[in-house]
Image 1 (cartoon, rainbow, N blue to C red):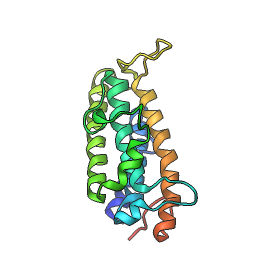
Image 2: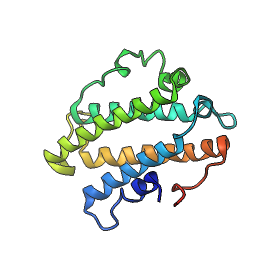
Image 3: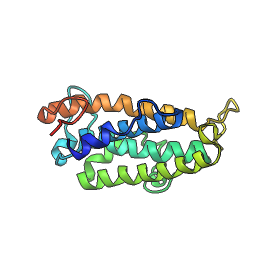
Length: 184
């Protein structure tokens, strides 16, 4: 079994408690996105499919942004750091998608992995302070604050949607298909 296959298959316990299953599922989605975007050059990460402008590089940069913004904002009601804090989002709402082609594959992967690392640390903090019922500091217009359970579920949804996109784009680049890496 390859290292990636082992990592992906070991992430979600089949009989774990709620936190373990949610975190395992999120880690599985993260691993699948990394696998679908891995071992490609800049041209592979910049490839599009049909009329869409979505690229695998754009997906990596978008998910780095989502990791940083969702966990910082929803758990701590804080704005994320660089590079997101230097963007005029009102003027360029697709900045991460548009600028991904300017970054090397190594830069994109590092940006995403660093964001995932920060998100994991914030989740660990929240789990230690109330578990899945830990309520974030963000307050919506309706006066509601999300708990960690809700934040994890919306992150799983975000990854699942984009892993589907990554499946199609990656197949068009080099024929790589499937949900799991091949077993050795």
